[in-house]
Amino acid sequence: MASVDFWLGVRQTLLFALYAAAMGWVYSRVVRLFDGEPLPWRAALPWSAGVLLLAGLDFLAIRGGLGASVANVSKVCFSSEMLLNHAAINPVFSFLSTLGEQTDYAAEYPFFDERTRAQKFDAVRGNRPGTQPAERLLRTARPNVAVIILESFGRTVMDAETEGEPVMPCMQRLKEQGVWFENFFANSFRTDRGEVAILSGFPAQTRISVMKLPGKSRSLPSMARSLGREGYRTRFVYGGDLNFTDQASYMYATGWQQLFWQKDFDFDTPPADWGYDDRVMCKWFGEQVVRWSAEGEPFLAGLLTLSSHPPFDVPYAKFGDRMFNATAFADECVGRMIERWKASPAWDDLLVVLVADHSVAYPPSLAYNEPLRHRIPMIWTGGALATPPRTVEEYASQIDLCATLLGQLGVPHDDFDYSKDIFDPALPKFAYYTFNDGFGVVDASGRALYDAATGQAAPGSDPRLEETGRTLLQTTYVDIGRR
Image 1 (cartoon, rainbow, N blue to C red):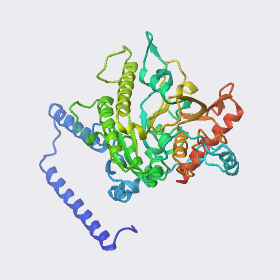
Image 2: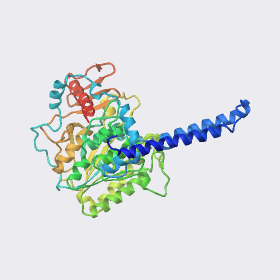
Image 3: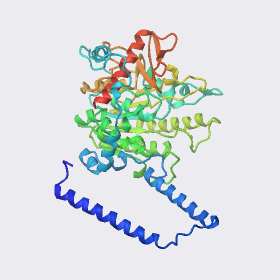
Image 4: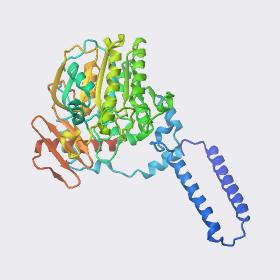
């Protein structure tokens, strides 16, 4: 009401009354066309079926279409200028959404009183005072950066073989050629939560996704915003629908200046269920990175793959197992893209970060809360690396990528409270992840698994790591409540 001129409000109210009166008048005239006599069932049946069909079409319109993405705030986001996106959002929707928001996030996991929680978090936070200069891996101060988020590339699948043939030969080869992070973990089991952990250094949640809360997610830090302040052009690419789980809203709000997704492409091949497959997208993205490199302006480019997502519909036939086959297809596509970069001038000034969005339940007997269920690959490669091939043994997770990458680029990362520079010897080395209403923490000495629904830790859990997990889980929800 404070945003609307008084006479504009009067005018719109009168228009509302006029529209309502017109609808009532039309309805009364339509009713007079009928005599009021009940129809026999044979005549009533097709009309009833017609009403049900119309109701279904109405529901379809409310949902937002036939695609995987439903109607959400991202549908209207179109610009890196957030003022324009805010102007495009339906104010009535925002008002009703605000009325329905009753969640007290800070009260979700009240493990400690506020003072104790803050003290415990200071001991495990990433941007705490007293950190030391990290080891330098790069031979150039500000290289171009390509972050490739690999859909469902679990460590167990990467290490799998079928009749002696590796499922991911390209990843195995790149592992030997670059910087390999041996003990790296996903923070969640879902793409939207994994993306936020990778790109914003913000821990995944147990029963919600902060990406689906645009009013909260827009205030998160992000590597795109931090690098944008340093003069980097930031672009993100996905072959599917970025409206899914409010990704577009999150991306624009956190500093990605250009988004390219399914609506922007018109390839000869038809899209699969989730969008254009990785063969098409890796070829397009590979060529774009070469072109962007030639422009001479530093850039951050992100790509989210999709072919290794169920239903594993790919134009490829190498393995009988559908998941193995789709993963091998995605692995080959990414490998070809990197070989294309190696053969181009772009390679000399390029840092490539390959990291999975989450793992998978393979083998099927693997429990949902086990550390191995959340273990994922991360590889750094590219001509910008000065270090020879090596293996990093420190325990870390997706939330640690932001501080580690920005630290290597000499970019401040004080606003990333949870992200720890993996190469900073003064910071604790552990991996934290969440599952449905619980968490896991693992380091070189042990692990802790906690089920918040029962309030019990798994047998053999390390009390010290359990306290770390409680602190991070409670702090995450307190943080969301304050945003």
